[in-house]
Image (cartoon, rainbow, N blue to C red; front, side):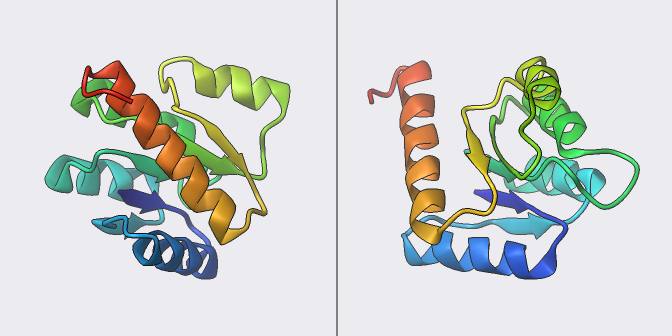
Length: 127
């Protein structure tokens, strides 16, 4: 699992909640460029992707590139889930789900578990 979040304390809390629930976090990125680089190096199963990021590119751009180049899906975690943002995000990024901020640690871990289960179902490993 790669966590992409530009708010330090939100990223730290997400990383802690995921690790406490038994998920392996391979890295934390604050920009789209960092996300693409870490995903290419670490090859996580899933990326927890914020949409609004530091820098010129946003999480939808990063998720689309990571999905297109590496085949790694994202789960969007964002406070910005209006219809236009969702429509743009559903395009090339093809996320495994949306988690609306603010979220509780239990909501985060449940959403990640559901996304991973969906991923396993898509690649033929069962549900």
